[in-house]
Image 1 (spheres, rainbow, N blue to C red):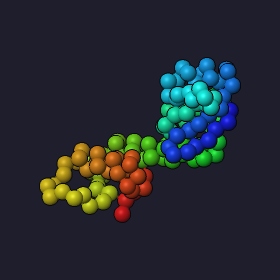
Image 2 (image 1 turned 45 degrees about the vertical axis):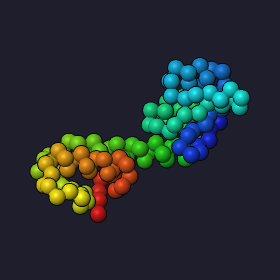
Image 3 (image 1 turned 30 degrees about the horizontal axis):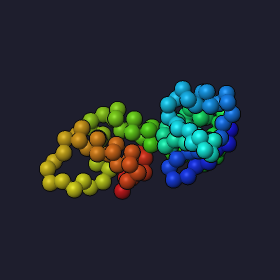
Image 4 (image 1 turned 135 degrees about the vertical axis):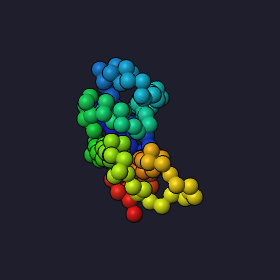
Length: 120
């Protein structure tokens, strides 16, 4: 299965058997003129491609980065309330509740504003 990553999309050239499997995912569309499948890069799509033919190195790296962020968010989610600290200075005047600090930390990690698991 040939693959290429460009502009947040992954392009796949697949044989007939692989196409049948790709159709079941409902995560990719087919460009009938050019004969390839394409989809927005997401963790479920990359996991499906990995299970069904493997990934090219740049896609593997993206999947690893997504997993690192997911692990850090999960760690923050289950952290005891007494251990939850803001990962940066939030631009609000009011004192935030613990669940608000936790949510802001997880959002910052998810959107890449701070590295997973830490801040400045």
